[in-house]
Image (cartoon, one colour):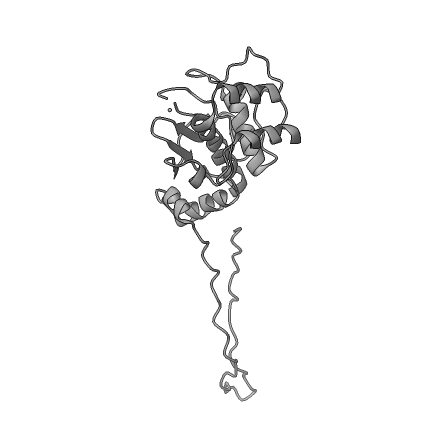
Length: 236
């Protein structure tokens, strides 16, 4: 059952697009400083002789410490081609407070290169989430994609019909709106997509919001969400 993110609306919000779930098969800015054209290391007197340089020893510039990548994040980013991509993905994961590694035992999260038509997919049978990087991604925009897919994983792992009805009721969504959608269905017009977007809103916040079932969740609705989500060490 992949959760798919098509690329049609990528221009509306950097790096984020719609993410319909298909229930099958159950899928710096670098600051470049130009060096001066010449460096004067000694004074030239009228006689033309250059005095020895008296330039003091300069301290060796220190390099910024590399980002600390947690073990789970290291595995998630290991398939990315460049260190820049790995840092970006690690920064995105750092924005997510939900302890998915302990809550979603057995699930695997992988960042991969760009894939036409999709930003992320969730495979329930394999318990695998794939997130695809794109040019223009920022840590925040990428974190939204990750959190959306984690929301699907939470739903698929823990929710029963009663939990789903509770969410739809809290969101005041009519009974005619399906929770899951079939092949080609629009994720953002379904209950599961609205929950996943709300989960991403809870974790990452504005400005990204793509659910078609309503505005971003209120504080009260987020309270319902937190009550439904499994948190490590807390009874549900």
